[in-house]
Length: 126
Image (cartoon, rainbow, N blue to C red; front, side, top):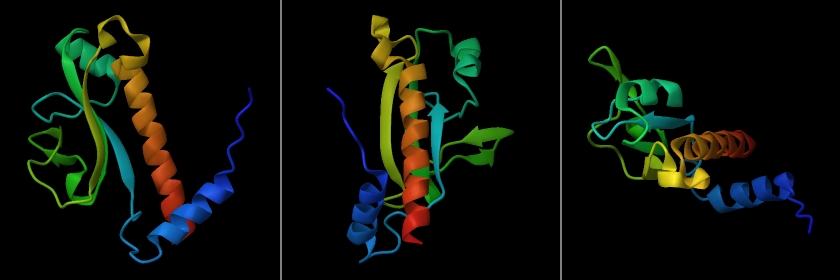
């Protein structure tokens, strides 16, 4: 079975849905990978080096007040943020507990794709 995705139709739908509120898709959106205390890592390898491969991490997509900021010599997630500035966050074990689809590597790749898609949709609606 072949699935065809019409990105232009998806962006048209996003534009129509967001037309009543320009802030719905406003970016830039970023994907993040952080430990449970909100310290942000630049890569899965950095997280594994620091935490080991059996620890939990937070993976998400955010913008504005929910995006990581420079603090305490590194990037940190904020303790609070405006509603709507975080669209996705999960906690998962780095190793996925044996399920390749649940690894931090797989989930972070998905978060990066979500952020890219939101940023593309935001450009279309701008």
